[in-house]
Length: 231
Image (cartoon, rainbow, N blue to C red; front, side, top):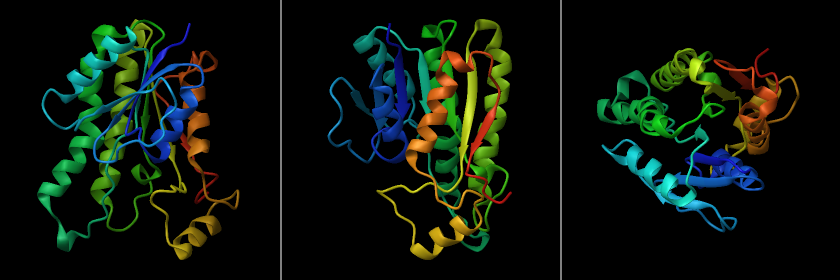
């Protein structure tokens, strides 16, 4: 029986790759905010929402349940990236970053929890910046470090209910909608053991493993998928 998978930030990039992959054998709902999805596979439910707004997460869960009748997997991919030097710190912008990177996943899980059964799985898309923050990305890295801690805490709290919570921390990933300058890509490749930059499909495969029965004894983990970046 197919499960129902909810992917936030599922219109483009890593989120879209995850949604397209999961749609091969599961029911899929995606959440998008500012980037409308294009050419979605048949059967995917697309919900527009700003997950940082009051009531938005509850409404997303309500629509998903109404459409598919169940919710089994949540992939918290929606997030914001900010590189802000301290001398140009903008408190409003940084509060917005924390709201989508940390608070939205917590709010979404709280709304979904009454509908989740034993065997459900949560995967949070983190970042290597949680442990290797570049200059200017202190708060972004801190937000992902908080997400990692929240992942482990929720794994412990929800384990007795048979609900697993894990995270994937990507290294440098080539996103078609937001390409890096060639010079930056070359730098990442030089510092990566496997000698290439990652693709959204590299992250998709990790997510598929973590939500599958093959990972039924895996919870509270942050799986780094970086090709050996900065080993």
